[in-house]
Length: 166
Image (cartoon, rainbow, N blue to C red; front, top):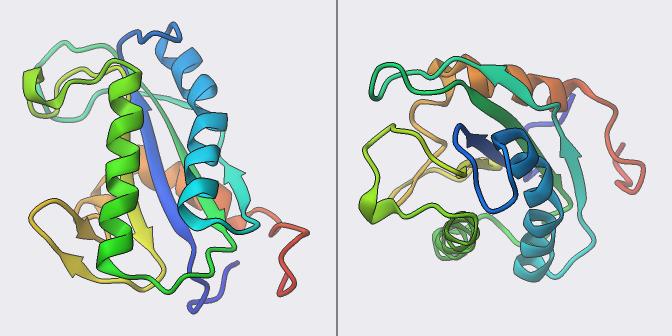
């Protein structure tokens, strides 16, 4: 189990409609190396990536009768930069550009409606922020079983071997 002072970054992934990569499950698998590359460009350090399994879940909220979702969580270890609002907003921009490359257009979608790719920054260490574009930790994280279950899965797994405090 991680220590409280570890500055992990957690990202939730979700999709319930096809993207340029294929089905929602194929999308979550295809985006993994690109998401890891974005983190490496953002942090410029040796990072360890811990992925949950892809979970098939019912849609929560939003329009009725939308397709089931595929959900997963990425936990990133080894972020050396101290958690800061400006860096978190830069990371958010990177995540949203990645969503767009997979076919998400936030200007044309219904709130909590179907999407080709959703990347939510869940937390970054102990950083607390309430910005018009980003609230950390994610304000509804604790209410979303489709996020909590995969998050717990990666939190209880063996820590990365490259991490000296393992």
